[in-house]
Image (cartoon, rainbow, N blue to C red; front, top):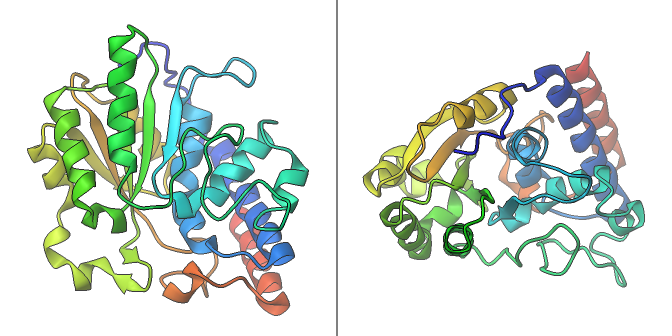
Length: 275
């Protein structure tokens, strides 16, 4: 475990940031009629903690990598990269529009994007290779991987997890966004043997814990308290569409953008959350 990571994490600031991020995502979706709001809302706190509580920054540079294997949640990554000045406001205004460079899934080559993802199940193998590459080159880069629970149906995810465990890649930290949905299907109903997820990772030589995926404090504390010597997983229990009542646990919001009335209600609810 890198000794340069700080144990100091401002939870109140994290709440304010996550509110701002959700509002920005809503604004973008309203402007362009874009999809994938709910998947971004379920991993907002996870991605915030990685960028603002774990990754080491020197201006716009960092030795660390965040890999959004859950590519359909990339709107949260885009708004954070905008906040950090790595992406421009104009980039997000052209999200999913002709002539824009930001699509519904991340593309390698866009500033701040480490890999093209969205074809689910590839991220674990990529992250394992990146973490092993850091070791071979005697560098201390941390690799942070954000997984959906749906893509844990892919055998390639577990092949990568097994290799990471065999290599004892303690510079690899994975977060499973356990919102219990894979598109329109509930994981707990369609794939009951998937649970408990944490046990699968532990059996492959990982260290890990389960947390409330909307508690930035729990997420950050879990990583800071890991023992080290093994790859680490934070199984994060989340709510798809978190923060907007009519989106929470409603699968159609994987795809829909709000109409003007729904947009106003969502904005009002997010203001109430901040109060």
